[in-house]
Amino acid sequence: MNTVTTKGPRSGERGYEESPRNHSLPILNPPNPQRAAAPRVVVIGKESVGKSQLIASLTGERPEVSNLKGTTLACAAYRWGERTLIDTPGIERQSDSVTTRDALQSLAEHDTVILIAAGTHLDDDLKDLWPLVAGKQGVVVVTFIDRVANVAASERLEELSRHAGVSFVGVDARAVSAEQTERLRIALTEPAEFSKQSPTLTTGWRVEPPAGWLDRPWLGPVLALSLLMGPATFAVWFANTVAQLLDPIIGGWLKPLAEAIQAWPASLDLLKAALAGQYGLVTMGPLLFVWAVPTIVLYAFLLAAYKASGLIDRLNIALHPLARPFGLSGRDIVRVVMGFGCNVPAVISTRSCSSCTRGSCISAIAFGAACSYQFPATLAVFAAVGRPWLVWPYLGYLALTTLIYLRLTAPREARSALNLLVVDRRHFMEWPRLNSLWREASGTLRQFFFQALPIFFAITLIASVLGWSGLLDKAAAVVQPLMSLFRLPAEAALPVLLASIRKDGILLFAGGEETGSMAAAWTATQVLTAVYLAGVLLPCLVTALTIAREQSWRFAAKLLTRQALAASAFAATVAWFGKWIGW
Ligand SMILES: Nc1nc2c(ncn2[C@@H]2O[C@H](COP(=O)(O)OP(=O)(O)O)[C@@H](O)[C@H]2O)c(=O)[nH]1
Ligand SMILES: [Mg+2]
Image (cartoon, rainbow, N blue to C red; front, side, top):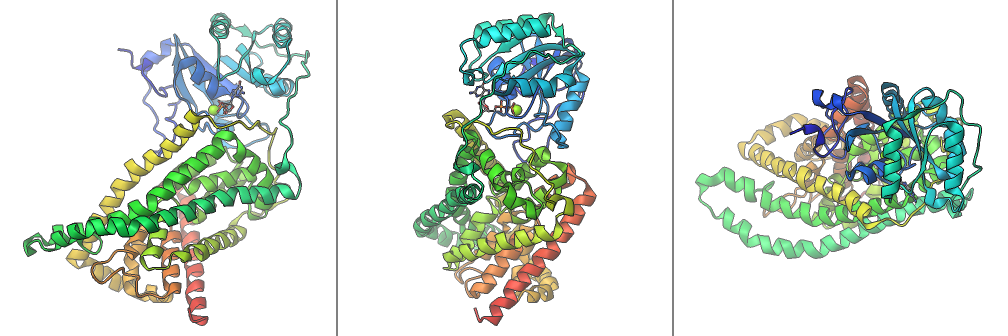
């Protein structure tokens, strides 16, 4: 059987990448000699003009379609009948992003092209993109034809076809008819050449989404900020409330189990520790479930709705003036927000950011985006010590220190007033469709359940073994003097160390036997300091490796050093400030 015809992105000369949706880094596929037989057609166009949507409709496969600009991050190949369609990231004029570069590179490697132009901005798209395809062969697909409420649209496209000598096919990429598919197929069988000269015939079509409150000069940024923070705050509050209700109930269920395990004979010591010891599975597991699951589920659906509706792009534009002094562009903000789900895909998605601000954006994610393991673990610790309200000072301090950190580290050119947001156009918003909502959200949830949870179990196991063997106490003795810099007891060293590998290591502050949590007797300031330090000192190991892959080892090493120094300084500040005010 021809492996080329199976589902998913396919191999190609450049090794087209798996769509980087999850923790696994993009894999270069091995070259497949059979593939050479299939004629390859590269699909090119600006961002969010429906390239992936068209491919999805034609092939029935699932490239990433989203109403968020810059969603497709890597070229990927999909089989369509006897042809192979190459999906590419959007080409943005004047952008030096990695994604634009990759799309241009893929264009250079292929002779047959489907040029996608949005019907809403047809003249602009043709003017900007035609020079790139001149001399190649192919067809123009005009998407968003449903937005061009023009009865004579198809006649206009006929005229354009005759004028330019290349077929123009108008479609609603979300619902391509059999007749449109057939026209495309025929046009590609003997594709005409794109003339050296751009077509001079214009349609004058221009459909802009109506300007809204978000586009107002002062109101816009304020509204955007509240739209971004409001639902997030609600999610935190809601998850906190649910968890506080569930915690004692589930704790009550598990108590007899923990007691039964404790009663096992002494020869099973290690197993007892691993299950019901201070860091054991039964002791710590409910914390993760009760605190993490509500936050993660709610957050996944919220973000999915923002992306699928296109609201997030509007927020980016509105927030750009606020982001610039910190070396970020509006576009980077959504990547940082994504980092609250998981830092890894967020770092990968910075490929579509301008190279001028990409470094700052990665720094912001690594430093300030408390991922879905870090944040719920943090909430769980605050709850375990009976001070759930600490979440508010925690978030406030995290935001404040992230901004200070960025301000200090962002390159001057990124902060310059000349760092204009490259926005060609405002995008149409749409009601999020249920299937896109579900696809977005379920991706995040799958990541959590299949990738984070197993690692969490491994961490409780490792910690139990280390604790049981006495190694922990020895390691803690080494790091003890450092912990006193932060006015923390020596035992705080272990969660801080573990959290640098995996963020849910923070949960160890909450672990405890009959004596209660490690942090139970600490002052509020100590709890805050410890959790902040463990969360921010270093990004988790997977994030660190991803940064090295996406940028370079040097960049990663510099970022980690800088972050560790800054985080230590900020944590020490809280610790000593807290002592000063007697907290
Ligand atoms: N109304 C309308 N929406 C479309 C059309 N084509 C794509 N979309 C929507 O526009 C958004 C961006 O599409 P996508 O395929 O991800 O764009 P890409 O960046 O070019 O790959 C998605 O929400 C699509 O559902 C179209 O022809 N008409
Ligand atoms: Mg796409």
